[in-house]
Image (cartoon, rainbow, N blue to C red; front, top):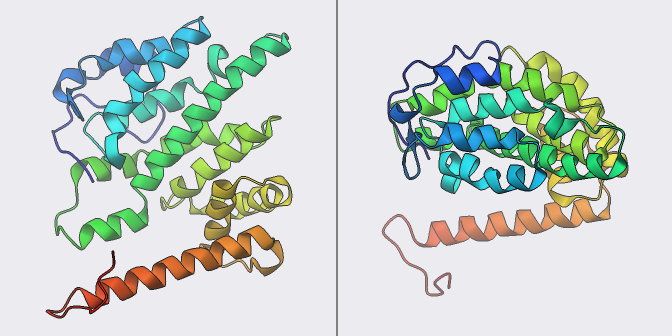
Length: 263
């Protein structure tokens, strides 16, 4: 789902602008969010790099929720996503100072930001565009703007694919997968396939495993030897749900009805 309001003074998405440039040169008040306009976003975004980790974490909801509420793409989503990508390497978020306690504090924030970028990219992936096209003939401006910005976002996410922390590199991989649907990025899918195989060797995260297995299949890889018992059970469960949903839809469309309604 997307919500339209024309963007003005937006940086060109071909390359990643500096974070401060995005804050200063974006006409935030002209951009739509879930609760009005983006006028309050610069203050919230700036707090994401505050020296105090408590302030950083408390700013997450105010900075991100208004531009991806209910999986929607808004006018302000692109500049926020570009800003988040631009601050991933900020010391307050990604780099420890040699103190293990400080580094451990900061890494969850990095994982959350990478995860948000990935979730937003999936909300604008090819499958979502195809689904939207069944209900609307006109391509949505905000969806298109985010998809155009994928190379810039990927340039920041890619740097974390070999991170020492498994949570960071796995989340970066899952975020990178939908971004590489962009025509300029498909060449990176071969490299991501190697990262995906390494994730499957070690990770037990159900969501991560599902995402990388789906990607490998889409890219034409045989995943038979990569699936474990949990993967097989999850795949069979999803197949049963899809079959049940198809059966319900068939029973309640085309002017007919079912003797056993789906409730």
